[in-house]
Image (cartoon, rainbow, N blue to C red; front, top):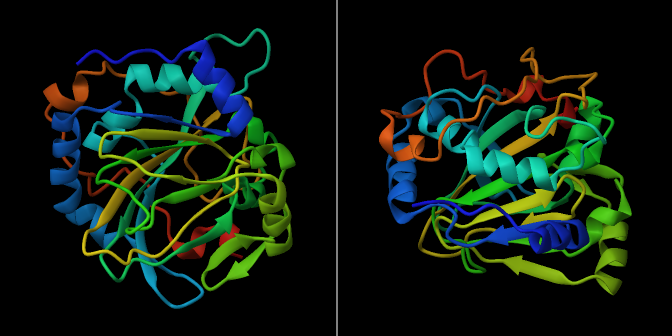
Length: 282
């Protein structure tokens, strides 16, 4: 399946709203391969972190910094996706197209039925600010629906346009870092709350400063997603959680995800995050 480049209208929508969903970006065959490998990925599982919400419900995530030739790395580095990121994410005038997009990290998010907890209102830059990145407009996340996401199983919620507020203060809520509830309440008085439902294969681009959250999975079905986060070479972390240096992405053809012999994460080389090393939790 040939993927279509994003349009000028979609770029304008992202800049206005702080997020952009594209339906059916990855084919059923691509998602099926991704899901099959993800649920059997013992390396990802043994490196997963349990994070409790304020009510004690638990979500699991595996977070790593180096995108390899595993199935997740091929997806995160696929050329049409990287091109879209380059066009959506702010860059300085004169920067060479596509040459300075960096993979920051990817994470496999696992919300199991009845167990998977909520994620409190937050901005990604509320975390990354502690890593001393200076330019939030040069950072974004891309969520890939591995399974369907809806209200029942805790889909992502965003406050449309809240990225224009800038960074708000964050503090601890359970084991998570959440945004100031006062500013969330103020935002909701004038801005629209959007439930971003996804079908497996849909993707969601969202700005590092958009306020977002998700509720617990109260359904009988799991909700799995892959979230890859990106920056630019001009946006340096001055207090990193890892020794991995941000380097420009080496993109791969879109067909690599299906046609190349890729499996799960390697035992060595992915550079997994540990709770102890995460400066945003300190």
